[in-house]
Length: 477
Image (cartoon, rainbow, N blue to C red; front, side, top):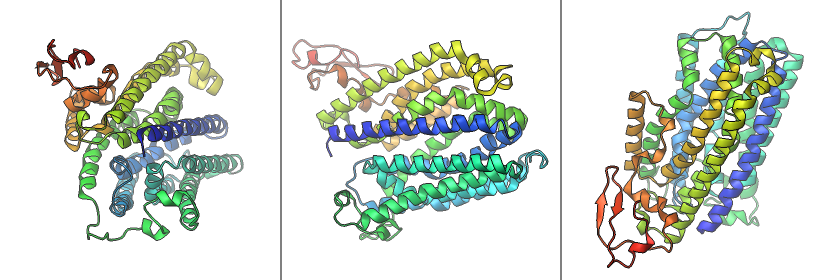
């Protein structure tokens, strides 16, 4: 698959993901406004902060590293070993759901059952829903790697719509069920999502005339199950080591991403009602980041991972692919900066009005508007960080991923949120050939050998009039 074709698929995936996120957030936006008028803010706080944190932490720890490692590289690989590796997410998910569920039930403050009934059942069902979703992980990665854009859109859209309908129905007719409502809706959502992928691949692999079947590495649905490969190896150890590197990175990133929820959950700095109000304002503030930047980051990580060869110097890769990657990176950075600045400017002016329309004085009074304005500035930082991070993690070698993890750890030690530091802070010299590629027209390699190494490890060309290639490259990378 050529770089231009991969770019086209990535663009369609990003646009589809963008529309999907708009649908998700629009439904959630309306649903929260509806729920606030029927349920207490304490229930909203427990569901949106504590139980959702349990669900997201379990999924993140069990699958995020596997997704990044298994989506790296092209589709030409031993997929049996990759699928075997992905099935390890299920026992990992069981372990994390049991361990975290015990913490949620035994070590954390339990809500008043008169105000928030059925808390224990909610913890069990949210943990179970995370494990159920992990059952579809091999199908999801296979679909993403082969750019099955419509499948993701249809599966997730159908799941979230049915979940929202079920939630609204139960809230309207059975509000006394409390956490049963959201727990059953969450379990129903993950079940429908996994069934969509399973049914799709079952029908696809059962129709030999399908054109997509020719591009798939499996011919039967049973090939997606764990099995011993021809060479006797159960997994690809290179992918496994890369997964471990990403896991160390992901573990820290999860703490930074969900930091405020961990603080509220473990330190009890806010009561459950205030947590509900905070979470609503938080979701409104991060709405644009999730609508625009997250689908772009996820989709173009796949693009960069397919076009660029991980751990290989830019000068040794196909120059056409490197040029396309550099052009796309430049365009994404411009788009992210423009969107971030727009949100920052208008968000400061209309934060209080937006909160008053959405939730009344409960949200617009107090610290709500100040919090929303702070998020508008935060979105600008997220915009730049997301694009640079997806590019760098797609191109970095295992050793550079480990060094990046160490740099993130240093950022935490200094009290600086690592997510505010662009991933290119590590400045691998190998990546600068790609980053400077947009300025290098036509393509060439500087052969004057007259360079000076700067403090960040980059190469600065001092120039040599005898070098014919010198004029084609920038004087400072």
